[in-house]
Image (tube, rainbow, N blue to C red):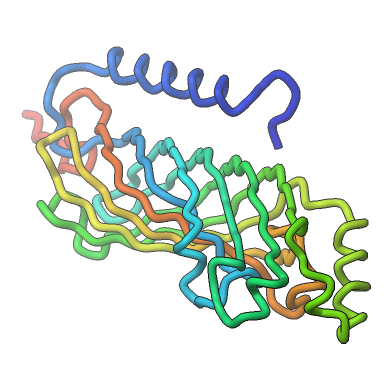
Length: 252
């Protein structure tokens, strides 16, 4: 997790500058297929856990996310990718039924900084106009979690002393500073030209933690928390204009 003077604002500013330098310094010639590509995307993080009754997550509390990607193509179908994401996760069970959720009213928010190393597979190849792809990997998510139980209605739960005890345990426990994540997702590429392409992606982050929302014992300790990233972005192919996958020229 990045702490100290390296605030999220500074990280985003420095990352944007880095990507702009790469774009400006890239050669202007057209590449049929490049070994390297960089990208930028924006979208939302959707929390999935104890504070949401929906399996697809808490769509009533989306959190913004800004992402940067780097790609190394090994072929038109297989690539390695490095993702750097900065965003927010939110949850508020008072926005949902049944009634007890409005009275328990647990909520949280968290800054999230992700680094993910993964692989990307395009079964039809990425040189098509439209190209679906799958991707997955392993990463680390640094978090700064703020739990909120200030609206908890003790009178409503007077007959459930075990809930109060569980909440006291959660309140006394330290929130997770960071967790391992295992993203798995799918995307669709639309080529805008030889260098630029538009990408839509959805990737679920599986975890081994029940502390993303700051509540465990007072929620469902048997269910792990997770979250999903939905985004739209662009990529820029870098290179010298040669197709690295083409057959070498015949020499006489």
